[in-house]
Length: 408
Image 1 (cartoon, rainbow, N blue to C red):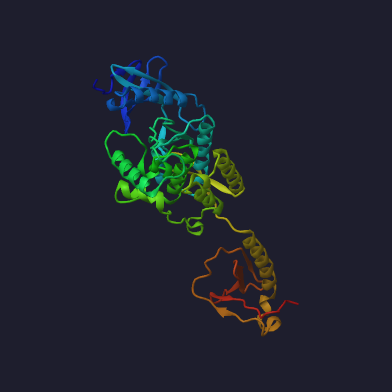
Image 2: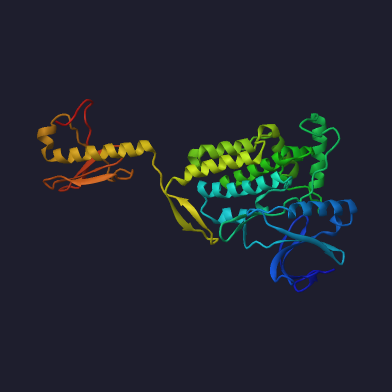
């Protein structure tokens, strides 16, 4: 059957083609019975010709349809018409996570908001015995209201367990053989074994996978959200698979990206090579992310509109508690200094050493300003010192006091 806009599959009328992947083509379609739009995934013929695969696919779709969570796109049903097998899913109005991150003013508040929603969706699925196996930015949608929707739960095919590689072991020679075989399979058109850059080490080795495999993929997605690039890559599929098994990702420096250290600890734990070293329960990941979000929510924010139309929370400049203490001290010292400025040459005498500054005032934010009682000086302070400007000449000076000096 040739598919084009206007054609129908069962009671679904095709509207427009909106995506394509290893499993087939995704159409926006109209459910003519319920009068709502759905995303209709039409499977490639080679995935439906094998009866065993066909039945397994239907069982997986049924398991996914049982999931009900705000962060998981709903599966409405599976069907077949004229030899064409399809899956009807919730139609999500929005953009993929990849496009949202690229188009939005990313900051750690937004990263944390997105990560928490993804983790909550995963936790619900894992608690119900469903493992995604193909989590990646293109399988996560962000609605126009900023809500995360994970797509294709349980639809990606498992890497078949290989004799001798089951579990968390296996010889190096066996692993190399499996790696070569998987690399060939992954590059063959129409095969659905996962996406190379987002696979866990146990997927690469062909071991049986569980929820901890999804957590490694989650770590890859989170790393990409933060840095804009995947942690493991190479010039070929084989190089990427090898990097997943052996390489450590390039470190993310909190000071450079203004990323909370706790978020980086969570990221590192998800990207552990051995499943036993990651979170053992996705709910523990959710707890850590929620706690971190509560901590960051106590900081002042302002709402900004992104180019994708999604409102996000953008962080206002933060100052440490030490910075505020210094600021208060500077304010008090400034008031004292202003009182004594008219008597610079008399009361302060030798302890005060006015020092000529550069033409530009200090670059730190000014915490306080004041005019001296005689109107000759403008005094101001930042977090590093106290300064005054001779209004008659416009020259800026810094007050430097000898150690132990105090005003009397």
